[in-house]
Length: 395
Ligand code: FEO
Image (tube, rainbow, N blue to C red; front, top):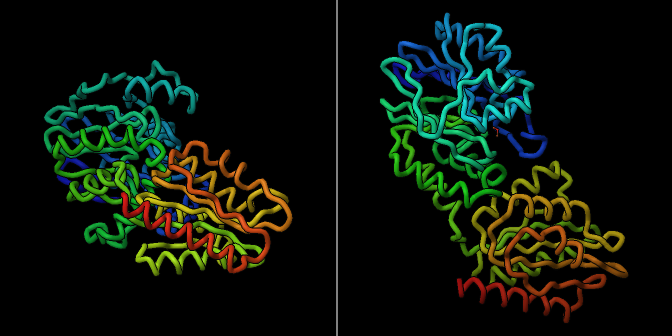
């Protein structure tokens, strides 16, 4: 990847079409990029040395950019996908000085076996003078690790934001990025990377808006040439505001739970409620795709109803995975429901409650039915739908 941002900044990172599940978890059907930026004042600085498997691409791009001497290598975040290639860069440019905040340097020492005293430590809001160009360091803790840092190219007011505002997305043409597609991928990225710490992320988003940046250059995906698009979106996603929408992640083994889900969907639709069901057990797709797609829809949904059959008294493992993911990513739904069918006995309510203990949503009365639902039991689902419609109306 070689993209000229302006006379002084060039994007020199790597594309990755091969990884279908980032972190072996998050679906990345459109690939991802590990962004790295070369910044030229009188001194030359590289921001983020990409992942080790991609450092060959980075070094080729540095040749293309005519970088014969590198003065500084700045690391904004420790995770391997951004800093793992540091040794290859140091080997190519032996005189380069490593630069980072104290938090990054401490974690780099731990995760990369690199001596902390090899780093020049930058205090919060301090500047690195490149000669005619200055870089200002601003920590953004827990967006999403403790160490993530924003560097602003002060003279251009261009922000290099580490994982914040990223997207796993390689556009066909970097000069004609489809903004809707970029936003959709950014939302999925937000769900898996930023949603668990959205309260902390919100503070950084408000700070970013105050800076009124001319451009945002994240660590993954294309540049945001109109920063208000992604800042507005993050403002909404990190807020406590939810949309009047119901998401139903479900699994069915012998169709009873599916019948219950269909009945709930039809009843909710008849009440004018927006609802979407996601089959976590869909044979056509990997569970991570099914759960990922459901989670993306939960970023701003008001109500989630998990539906599962009982397997040996416990929730179906696909539903348990969905529950664990919802819990780990801390969905902001206001209400959480549970329903499903069981054969002869069930501990589903207790187990799901334990798997979702970090979700603060108020619990709706569970609807658990033995075997195939009869008319009376379908009436319980009608009552659940009425409750949901009333809760949404209150919101
Ligand atoms: Fe893209 Fe936190 O690494």
